[in-house]
Each structure stands twice: as C-alpha cells, then as structure tokens.
Length: 342
Ligand SMILES: NC(=O)c1ccc[n+]([C@@H]2O[C@H](COP(=O)([O-])OP(=O)(O)OC[C@H]3O[C@@H](n4cnc5c(N)ncnc54)[C@H](O)[C@@H]3O)[C@@H](O)[C@H]2O)c1
Ligand SMILES: [Zn+2]
Image 1 (cartoon, helix red, strand yellow):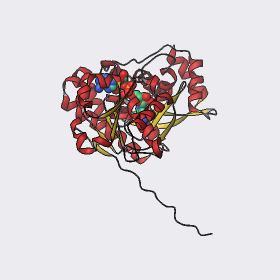
Image 2: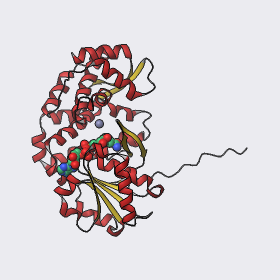
Image 3: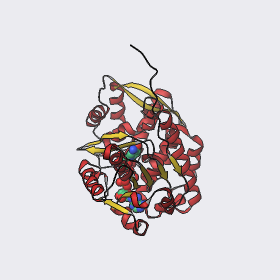
Image 4: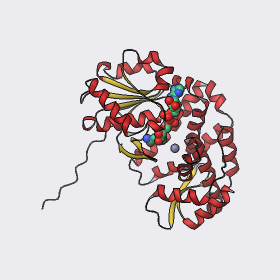
C-alpha cells in the first residue's frame, strides 16, 4: 500500500464589500445569468432595486424556511433556465440567506451564490460562516450544508425600512458578541441605544462591520465548530429551548438565555457583572426574565443537545469580554433553571 499525503482541496474565499451600495451588484455579477432570491417584505419595500433582475420572491417568515419553499425555488430556477454558471443572490434577512445558500449548494450539485443581508441579524450573524439550513417540522436547521458565499455585500440603507423589533433581534446578537469577546464595544453600546443607531449611519456601519469581522474571525478559524465557534452559542442553550414554546423572537429568547448563563457564571466562575449585562439588554428593548416550566425546559435542552449523558457543555462568562466553555451537571442545570424561572 502506498500512503500518500492527504490532498488539500482548495477553500473558496468570500469577498466582503463593507459600506457598499446595492447598485455595485451589477459590476459584480452578470445580471443576465443571475437569479435573485428575496422575500415579500424586502421586495415590497425596495421594489425599484429589483428592476430588470430575474427575481424569485418567497413568503417571509421562519415558517417558510422549509423544503416546500426549496422545491418551489428549484422549479423557478428551471423556468429561468438556470445552469451551472448561474449565480444566486439572496437579498434579505437570515431566512432568505439560509435558504439561498442551501438551494445554491444543492442545485446542479452546487452553484455560486452571494448575499446582500438586509437585517441587523443578517449583517452581523446569519450571512457569515457558511451554515445554510432549513427547518423540518419543529426542528430548526435540521437539514443543511456548510458552503461559503462568493461575496457578501453590505448596503445598510436597507435598514431604513427594518421594523424596531428586528433591530432589537439583531442587537441581541451584537450584545452577545460584546459579552464573549469585546468589552470595549460593550462600553460603547452602554452609552447608546437603538434610536441612536437608527439615526447615525456612520456609527451603525462601523458597529456592523466590527461585529461581522468578529464572527468572521471565529468561524474562519473553526468552520466545523470543533472549538471556539461554540462560544457563539452563548445564551443559545436556554434560548433555543424557550424560543418556540414561549413564542419569543430569537433575540428575546437569547437575551433571556444570556441572563441565565450569567446567573450560572456567578455561581461557578464568580462573575460579578450580571447587572451590567441585564441593564444593557433592557436598554436595547430586550427581556431579561421569563416564568417557565423548568422541567419541560430541561427536557427541551436535553433533546436539542442530543447525546447528553449527565453533563452538558455550557458557554459561561468569566467577565464581560471573556467567555469559556464549561461542563455542568444536569443536576446543577436543573437547580439553576428552577431558581431562574421562579
Ligand atoms: N446561518 C447561520 O449561521 C445563521 C445564524 C443566525 C441565524 N440564522 C437564521 O437566520 C434567521 C433569522 O434571521 P432574521 O432575523 O434576519 O429573520 P428574517 O429573515 O425572518 O427577517 C426578519 C423580518 O424582517 C423582514 N425584513 C428583512 N429585511 C428587511 C428590511 N430591510 N426592511 C423591512 N423588513 C425586512 C423579513 O421579511 C422578516 O419579516 C433564522 O432562520 C435563523 O435560523 C442563521
Ligand atoms: Zn442566534
């Protein structure tokens, strides 16, 4: 047997266009062989931008991030005579970019794709990292691929039409980023609020860029989530479990999840800054507590995590700006859930 050095396949680089304008898109792709995917809300608010572009408009909302929508997009791609050199461009929030990346990575065994994220959450989180997925029944992101987009273009003027609730959702992830790795940004946010960022384009643009780069750095070093990428799950263990059953938005759910992680961090790591985190979340319109059924929520956490035995990996804070992954026992978790939900 001849053992050869493993062959290293080429990674596809992603080109970022920060502080850009949507009309740059026509210099980046051949419009005649590009198909845009967007959702109803983005299309209605920005109809003129889609003039002369082959566009597929999907229904908006998480409930449409499903196989049925994928099938309908594929039908329309065939109608548009899309081929292996067609580029798909997802213009929208995380639902649109997730589904665009997914369709692009399976259509004709994979075609190129790019994103123009139009929500705060999309700009700083969902568009970055190459995870593209759809939901199956009640299971979020159950099916998907890891494929990187060819480009990501930021045009923050899309945010002019973004509802307040969606700003809050995005800021929950921004606050998460500050907690796990950027104390200075935490302090900056402290002196400001959503109203400020809605009116100050330069500050918003800078904040979005810093956050996108922070996520980018973490995921570029750990594409398949073996190490530090896990830190991005801060607040998400409880968050995922309560989001659907308690009818919370993702941002609301992880805000409560971050508070819970802070409470456990107080006990295990002697975190002393829970109140500062709480104040900041409230300042950005996010909830910090919830009355829930601890037994039911514990079951949901165990179900979500799969293969749990008597310990669970949890992202905790040592201090603002420094997160760590620590195993905690299910007993400890249950006790903390009972205390927190009281
Ligand atoms: N792939 C990843 O790594 C990753 C990471 C985080 C989240 N996600 C996914 O992202 C999704 C959430 O993303 P989201 O919060 O952007 O949700 P979303 O795509 O549903 O957008 C939120 C709402 O805002 C509307 N909207 C979008 N842009 C607008 C604009 N400029 N003006 C007016 N309305 C606009 C949408 O129509 C929708 O109603 C979830 O499905 C989640 O699983 C993926
Ligand atoms: Zn999240």
